[in-house]
Length: 312
Image (cartoon, rainbow, N blue to C red; front, side):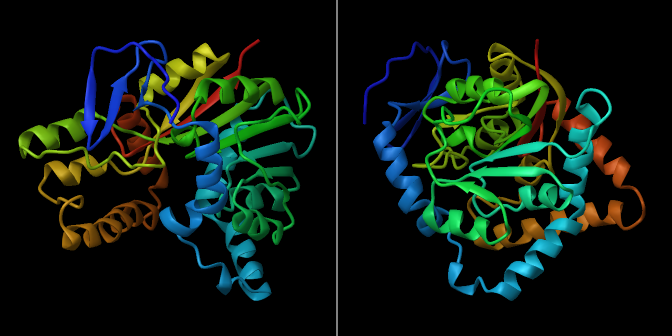
């Protein structure tokens, strides 16, 4: 690992790794930061085999056809599309151009492709890249920290879904995103919402040791709503929308300790699904969306979902 010095006064210890509240970066990150060579090797060869395993052997033509249809009809993808379209400047002259960075196995870009958009995906993992090509996406197979091969002012929307927490230098990435976006273009960023008041209250109230939300070796950076918004601003963007998902810290604080209990962990997805479907199936999706937006403005929720516009 290459030693990178950053000033800090507050830090946490996760095993042998230090997490610092970096005063120059404005967000939390590990110290020291892994070097570029280590990161490339990890994501190109091991990430989807070790951290988020995906069985590519089951990918048949029938599988791809079915998943493409589901992606086209996906209501969540549709809500993302609608929110982005609402914040793009002026009347649309037709479908736009999307850059999806670090796509992995996520098929949001397929939803845009089915709506006629020109979609480019950047994915370093060889198996994930091959998988995405099967859907007709243009895929660039390389590590995501280099966008120098892309022309400036090329894309209407750039999607960074759970990418910045993995990068050695998120600020450099966002500056490059600013460069490749057209004037008035949008970046959509998703990151885990970490070291929140809810997480820290859970740790202190139940007198637990450790930081179970710290995910090593893949999570280098730890953001919350304010630190991400501030970083976007410093990189030339203006936040226009924020939301979140179900606040899992509510479960932790109520004694459903999915970090420490396998039984409790198995309860989480059914609980969250039932909670959300109770709103959606009764025609109250808008109420659910407003609830999550309100929680986001309070800094709550397990993830940060933010849209920001390229400033002049």
